[in-house]
Figure 1 (cartoon, rainbow, N blue to C red):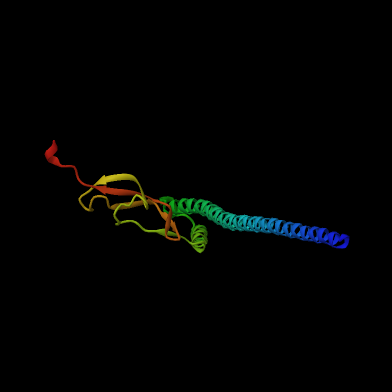
Figure 2: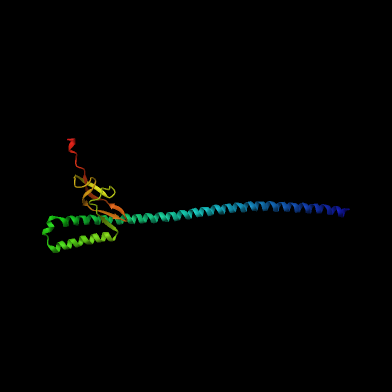
Length: 189
């Protein structure tokens, strides 16, 4: 009987060890599943963070490129408008009465310089626009003078005092003009 009694407790202890191992495996399997799920969540979170950072970088690059282009455009505009002022001064000098008595060679040289300035400004995409006879547009014209007249409709540009310039369809320097206004009514007196 001792053999059988000895065997029974051993079998019970073997069964209990097996059930303990199986519970440990289930516990560790459950823990590893939780750890795996947590690792996958973290991976997804880091992936979204990396995508967001990459999108921010792309947007930053675009914004910087746009700002650089805008800066180049403003600098070009600033320089060309300085040339436009020189062209205006040459126009005034060439239209002065004293130029009629000037030496022909000297006059032709000044006219060639003025033409070169105009061509240089035009080659950069800046164009003068004519406005005499047009209706006054505050986006294109800067009214410096007004004159009552019956020869022109009110708010019509009568004289261009300084030409305006456009670049890519936008006014970069409005023309300074004189506009017509309606004659005052004599009935008011």
